[in-house]
Length: 169
Ligand SMILES: CC(C)(COP(=O)(O)OP(=O)(O)OC[C@H]1O[C@@H](n2cnc3c(N)ncnc32)[C@H](O)[C@@H]1OP(=O)(O)O)[C@@H](O)C(=O)NCCC(=O)NCCS
Image (cartoon, rainbow, N blue to C red; front, side, top):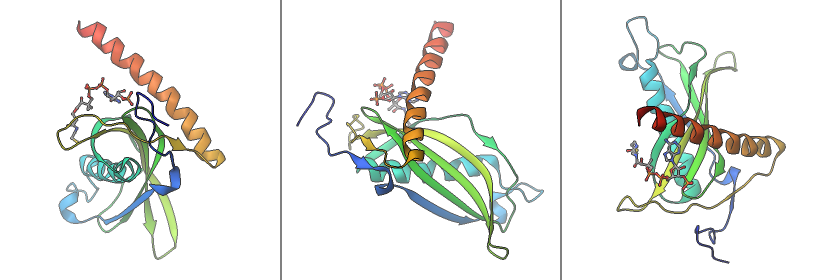
């Protein structure tokens, strides 16, 4: 089946593109107090999110936006940082990806949630033109909840963009 929005592409389950990155925090990534720089964590979140977006869309992608981010706890030099990314929902050419970050204490075998963010990536071809992306098949109750929430967040983002446009204009 084909359609004007390109959704002849076979839909793909969430687990097919879930990704994980691990990074040991080095002194070059930290401030003088030994805390990981917020900007460096955002850089890692962007890369981790792009992995899931690339895998879901099987395409080049660009970052369209990163939503509000909270740094919940400091990450220190020597910490093992784990970043997990998962697609929440795909729209026409864009995808909302959630990235959750933990510090893993490999001695005590415990983990600590340190940050989370939602990012939107847009699939593009080699010339930078937008490309349609496959729909997502949410399977578990958690995936279905995230799918619904992603739809609501998209509406809020659009309203906020519109509000900014009218304020500037
Ligand atoms: C993001 C970008 C591709 C949007 O292109 P555009 O022509 O302005 O956007 P359009 O209005 O045609 O929208 C294209 C898609 O992007 C989404 N989008 C656009 N701006 C967005 C934003 N700020 N946040 C979330 N999604 C956004 C739209 O909702 C639309 O999604 P859909 O096709 O699934 O419905 C474009 O602004 C761009 O290339 N920005 C620079 C990206 C970049 O360099 N990123 C950092 C380095 S990777």
